[in-house]
Length: 283
Image (cartoon, rainbow, N blue to C red; front, side, top):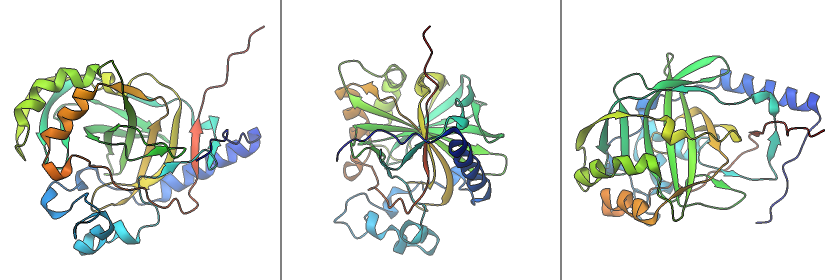
């Protein structure tokens, strides 16, 4: 897929696009962070399986959105569709170290925060960080390119609405420092579904990183029940994970879940915005 530069709209149109995005996010019904399915026996990522992604919507009535929804995730963050909207502003988040446990859900490895791990503020609403987990390969693609791993930081508001920050990774020489600190615990829960272990204090700031450019769109949970109304933020900068770390995560889950990325979903004319700071002027 050819790469084209993001369309840069005049300031008035960018502000209007931002206003429309704010209205959409305020009006859309929100998904609850706790709605993510816990029992992986009920679904599969294998496209040949009767419980594979193409059939998720038919497994249970409450999962109908997986097939019928018009705002499903993940999607390709296509350069042709992305609009520069500087009015979105820098990500407003304040994370802090908090007590946590690590859980093998069978289909992924999740860090569940027990204490206050901080929050992300979107459109004036605070979304508390509840948990984070990994998918490999990435669920979102950028300009048609799929990377090796995607971290999801899942947040929930007081009204039980969900906002997710996605961080993309590619295999490189340098291991991911955040994941490295969790490696002993991941080894202990490998191949033990529903096994949960206390991991003491975990600092999510090390997972989020400091990159400022991000994509924003309205979507859904990427596992059943695929509930829509999720505010998605996907960080543009791709981070590095070592090959052994990627294999550790894959080997820890069930054998048929080693590749736990949902296929891309139709965009259906949704707005995809990108925030990029104004370049510094040199005099």
